[in-house]
Image 1 (cartoon, rainbow, N blue to C red):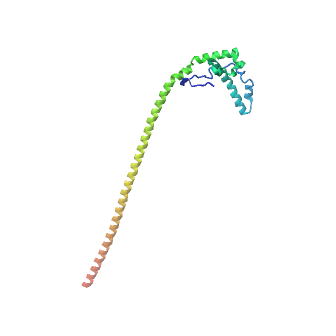
Image 2 (cartoon, rainbow, N blue to C red):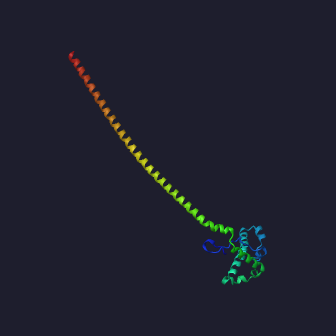
Image 3 (cartoon, rainbow, N blue to C red):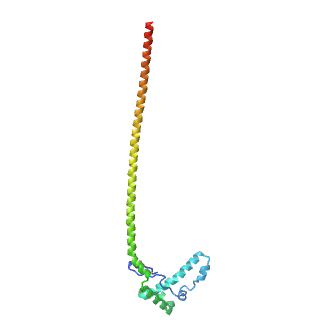
Length: 200
């Protein structure tokens, strides 16, 4: 098959550019009956026959181009088939070659749009790069904020722990002081009682 990329310096044979007439097409794979294709229930056979029906058109198109180029390919025995000698095929070949020489508006628009499409791809890539950098910066900022918050929580926990330790120590000292004051009050009562006994 002769489908080629026109944008890389090679020719392109567009399959819808020019097709053979019905009577010409039917001379290729003459046993292929498209009516049986539509009514056939065997999916594999149906696909095979559909492929043959498509290849009918492809063979005519490729043969027209190969024969026009000449060379070793054009001298292949397959091109000795009577179909390639008929006036109908020669008319088809001439019409196809003329269609290939005249660029279609579709081809022109694609060729002129290639540079614009490439520029748009470049702009999209640049925007994606900026967005990617912004996302990375946001991620780094979030990581730094999380680390700062974690450090602040650790500092606050240490302060609270120190306050708890100091409060516990103060409570312990207060209890000790209260205990000592109780002992002093008991000693004073004992002294007063003893003095009262001596006076009597």
